[in-house]
Amino acid sequence: MSATDYIELWHKHLRGEIEGGLDTLLADDCVFYSPIVFSPQEGKALTKMYLMAAGGTFSEGDKSKAVGQPESKFKYSKEVASGDTVVLEFETEIQGKYVNGVDIITFNEDDQITEFKVMIRPLQAVNMMHTQMKAMLEKMQG
Image (tube, one colour):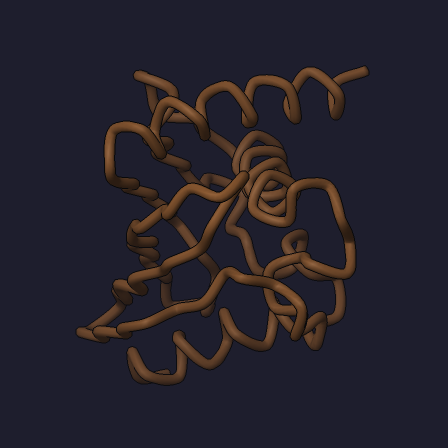
């Protein structure tokens, strides 16, 4: 696959068009780098949990506003592809605050994600995301 194919693969996932979703798309040894947590989160299960929590945070708990849905304020504004890596710049609004960031996604030869790195700005957005992600992760863990 080409890097632009990887962008389309990620968009297919967001639209719910990949059978098995993240379980299919994430490599077992995937590593997630969060703007909120200092240490890398290693493994498919942790990466999936963080990505699902982020999706819930960006949609503010409203499934109709989930990332990839028409009602969502989340949108990718720029896409850069090179080799096995894509960089997707996103913008959204949460609780009336502007959030801007990038997803840096690396794929392996099996077309699975091996690394997912998120960076967010401005600082006010990072602080707000920290609070919301913490609450979302606690809710997911029961």
